[in-house]
Amino acid sequence: MLAQVYSSAIFGIDAYMMEIEVDFASARERTIVIVGLPDAAVKESKDRVFTAIKNSGFSPAQGYITINLAPADIKKEGPSFDLPIALGLLAATGQIRNARFKDYVIVGELALNGVVRPVKGVLPVAVAARDDGKKGLLVPADNAPEASVVDGIDAYPIHDLVQAANFVAGETTIEPAKRDLKKAFEEASDYPIGLNDVKGQEHVKRALEVAVAGSHNMLMIGPPGAGKTMLAKCIPTIIPEMSLEEALETTKIHSIVGLLTPKNYLVAIRPFRSPHHTVSYAGLIGGGAVPKPGEVSLAHNGVLFLDELPEFNRNVLEVLRQPLEEGSVTIVRATGSLTFPAHFMLAAAMNPCPCGYFTDPRRECRCTPSQIHRYMSRISGPLLDRVDIHVDVPALRYRELAGEYSGEASSQVRQRVNEARKVQRERFKGHRIFCNGAMTSRHIKKFCQLDQEGRDVLKMAINELGISARAYDRILKVSRTIADLENTEDLTAHHISEAIQYRTLDRTLWL
Image (cartoon, rainbow, N blue to C red; front, top):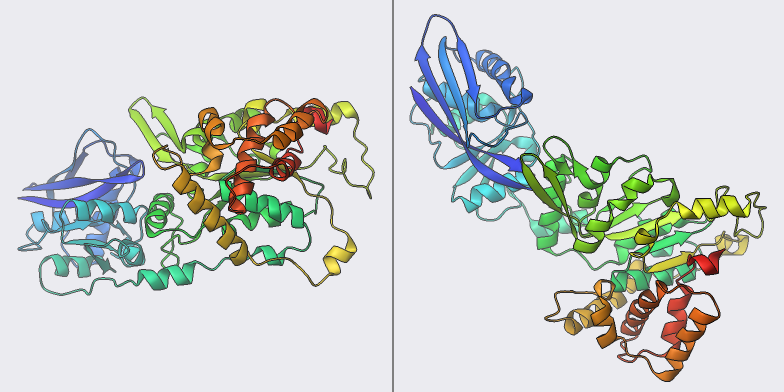
């Protein structure tokens, strides 16, 4: 007897529909064949399935069993096919009659006692099932809140194999999972830290505001304990709030990696990812035999923070160039290529020298000039070319730490950022970019016209202060953002002057 069950699998960040065919023929001995490019976890499912069937009170039939995972030309991985295979086997052996398989997509891992365990990637599976016209989705109970985020399809929470079998046979009913997206956003959109939690460093907070307003990548340089990491964690709090579309796209990536929980099933705040400096290529941009998203994709629509930047492997940092330019990362394997979204703001921090105290007036730096030069040279020129703002973060003094004033709240700064972003969206209509940080030379020439006083200030910076040539376009882009924050169309000398202050790390000025 043949049974056909519908399931779904992940490819990249999207899911595709699958048909699981289970054929049973009587025989004296049990023989099981799984075809359709299964990986080790899928091949092992037969042992989990038969034990779960036996322990759930069903009969583990003897016979020749063929399980086909279609389409057969795509490699299948993971334990999410346990539940549909078990239900298909029960139907093929006549233990489930009149099964309503055609209306549902089924995913779930089985424990040996028949309990259904959660799996990864349920959100994209729900999207694929809805787009395919299915009425419902049978998912592990812990995954039901995640699946319920998708409009247009019901997500039924399944606790064990018996419940699933009775439901598809029409012998019992299950209430679909309910969700309130507005409430979910409110519950998930509380940031643990804000700008007013950071003492002092007002000029750095201003640099953060400029960086976020124009979507400029930035680098903070300062001694240990100056507050660089804490400031970086405040960046998501001043980025405009996530839209539902952005939240679903980001949640989909986190779902595939398995970072969601029944309580935190929607990523409603800007991601903040801070990988350790020992991270590998695959960990940073994604990879593996079956490629999975890396840190740059987990930071999509948020912030990627690289602390102790010179300590990262230089070759690993070079792979950031593609996502920084294109907002995506493509991973090529012999079986094909996958593209993951990776549109993020890069924030980095570093010490000014190996010991960390080169710029600290209260601590003696014991590094030689050659040691400092080698340390700074670990960051490649091409990567620095993609960082518009470098800002010095000095050590705090006692009066700043003990003072009551801690600056504006993140909500106040976010309001100004929102207004500046609106100006940029209007300016770049039809230009395929949305912010000043993405401007090319053609856009700079059109939208960054200087008066004579402004040109004089920029000329002095290049000729007398030693500002490098690579900084020229960056200064103009940052100046444009500063003017947008003031809701001013014209670039003036004071806009240029402030932008010049954000070029701390230009080589000729630094050493």
